[in-house]
Length: 175
Image (cartoon, rainbow, N blue to C red; front, side, top):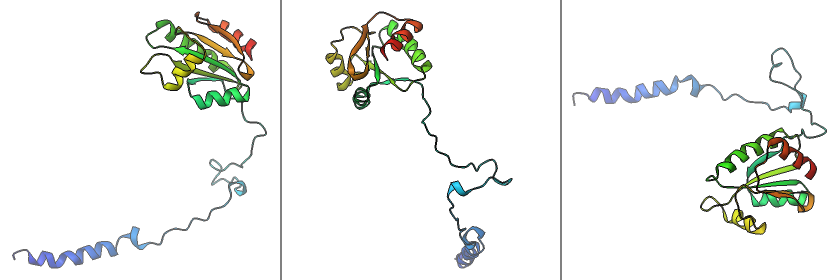
């Protein structure tokens, strides 16, 4: 009972804190949305406001090498893109070096008309889709590169290690 007076003051203290809280007592600000195309640059918003414009053509993105994805691969086949398939194993030191060369060449190509895929060959890293594509092309050794032209016609197949310039010329000839 010694501290009963504190229990009587507790509601007064809490109510006073809630009632005097400026975050709770101020009204919620209203935001008026305007279309971004109507914002005109002014000194106040010059750094953040830019007119919306739609480019007439999408920018050309560099070709890339990505992990094998069956849906992306099939879409690339249907679209007539040139496709590079690199059959890879992490246990193969030449494959690791060749992958770096392929990534460098693919990154230097200014074409979205080329799709590149790394296909893992060995379980457990190889998915069922990767195992299926290995069987479709009867690939027997890691490090094999297959390049398909538009419509899926095989333009190049070999498991020798290529230099950057060699691969670049093969891709140009296959496109």
